[in-house]
Length: 166
Figure (cartoon, rainbow, N blue to C red):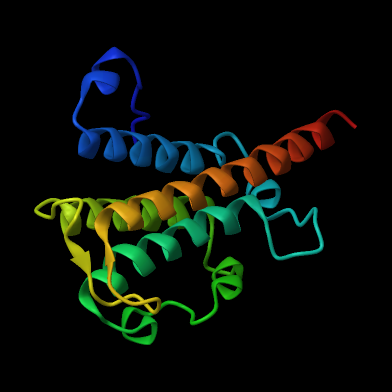
């Protein structure tokens, strides 16, 4: 993913474009948290939860599928092939590696863009567990999730890189 640049053009853009620019910036930043890491570093478990850098990116794909597939289409999480519980989306399997998780995340983000391309911000996503919600709400929620997880990733990455010099 190319990291978007937020500048004067974005400030003057319509709100839809602003949302999408910020979403793409956060998506790219989440994927970039894996840059330059070894597989071991990406999987390093440094906190009591299942949160790892690789797991955060894998969870990002889960979030995209919840909001821009399930909520939009009404398909169940089982039909989409994602866990029922968000915590389970952090679980890494042996086949998960930096390349595969990044590729999946990039594909899922592209699918999200395609799925929402023809929608207006006030169009309703009928299939979420909370009930029908406008696309604008979904965009805000995904931005909130990505921002929160980027904070987690920044701290974990700092810890991982600090271990290199120890």
